[in-house]
Length: 221
Image 1 (tube, rainbow, N blue to C red):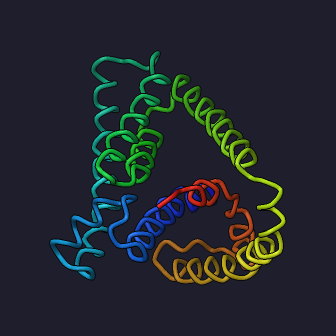
Image 2 (spheres, one colour):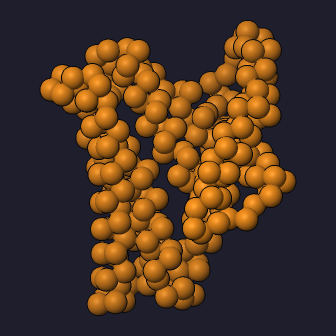
Image 3 (cartoon, one colour):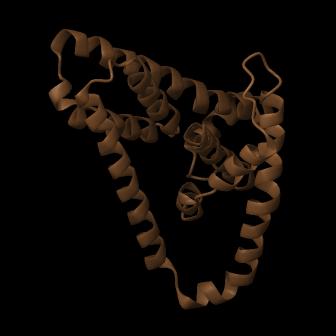
């Protein structure tokens, strides 16, 4: 559940940042798609359509790609090449959607969810899961190394107090409140989660690992 929360939370953060930058900096080159949509449908209508495009379009295409991989695997049986194949599919989705100013992460997550949950769970697919875990750890390590490379002593001295206070507020106030509220609402449905307050707090404290936040903080607009 914690992994799923992180997977579906991060794309929303990226999309929200894109929308906020486009709103506070009209005509920004960071999201030309938003400028095109709002110029045709207006600010309010264009913002809604922009969010729909950013979430629904890549998610649907990701689902189609995921089921296509499973179907083609039954015909060609390319499990021996599954590592390279899925890595190539992820890079292709990332490149194509980024080229048209659409967030690629819903497509990547949808593809991975379909392949991971509807496959036959053979040895090759288990190797793929292990490979992706190692690749994810490597990518996170590189991100934080690059972050350290662009920081200066002056930046640390200037923003240390404010940064620490903001981090503490998010970790101990904002995020627990949001997670507790959302999980309480979700627990009222037919498929109840049956989570007590300790487990909800665990989810709220595990979530903010900071990788996506670090990447978003380096985006120039």
